[in-house]
Length: 76
Image (tube, rainbow, N blue to C red; front, side):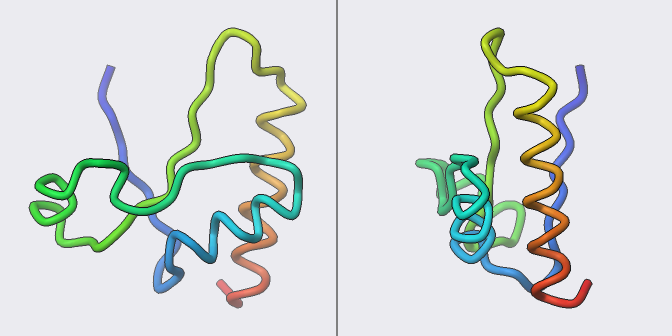
C-alpha cells in the first residue's frame, strides 16, 4: 500500500484541526512526533486522520464534510 500525503494549501494544520473538531471529528495536528520527516518533506506540521475497524462510513463522510468546510472557510 502506498502512503499519500495531501495538504490543504496554505492552511495550517491547527486551523484544519479546529474546524474539523467543530464537526465532531478528532484528528491529530502538528509534527506528530516526526520532526525529521517534517523537515525532509519541507513542512512545519501536518493534519492526520486515523481510521480503525470501529470507524463507520458516516465517520468518513463527516470528515469529508469537515474538510470541505475548511476549504470553504479558506476559499479553496
